[in-house]
Image 1 (cartoon, one colour):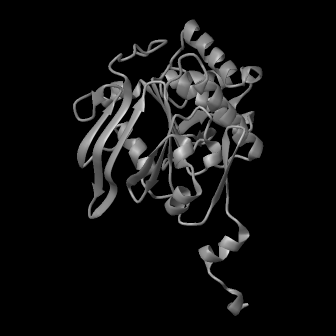
Image 2 (tube, one colour):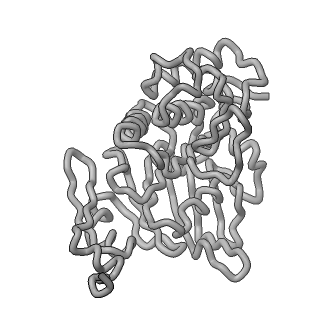
Image 3 (cartoon, one colour):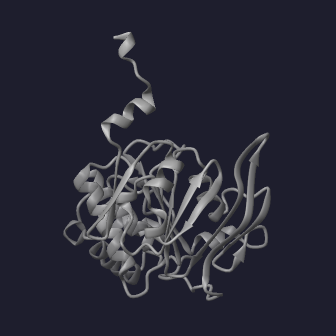
Length: 297
């Protein structure tokens, strides 16, 4: 039975500890000896090109995949030795990629199906029950906490509006609230701004930064391939390439032209302004990516 808040596991300083994890599918190695640690309340960013294994690693943390070898411990519980259904009650997920197809009258974004006819408050309350519609009646305390969480992500003016009339950026923030409503100890943000316009993206990033600056934030794993999406509150950055973490450390040591050029396979320049990083690929480097086609007209 879902309660208004989950009792924390209260075990150890680490929210995530992955040691030498290997994940294989047939002859293909998806993760190759990955090790990763995230302290409780800490934000760690995982950067890398498409297909390098970032989402597969997040699915390991959720118990959706199991390592071929190695050890994965989340919130003090080792996968293969714990009830993953119970573990997931302590994890919030925002993931715009999914293989499922929504039914009529529902929105499927951020890894969650939400009935478009629900009010925004009701949509967030579905996070207590992990359902499409609001089939269970939330308690008054749960409803009040959902409204407070929406205030926290900047949607206090949208509490009673239908979910389906929100902009895409507002829907994304509402689903961040949905992921937070059960007070997770770990929040996984897997490319949370994918598909958003500039204003929508910045609203989501501001929301994430606000969460990280709260008195008792969850541990956060931010998965992206855009350095400008990193909050100044990011404690550690990991670069991933071909199923391996190839660099790890404080952002200023890792977010360099040399390391990002090697990771993403194209020459980049990096600047830091107002606590945020900005990456640039100059037009003259485009020829290195697509080849000189002038001879073909």
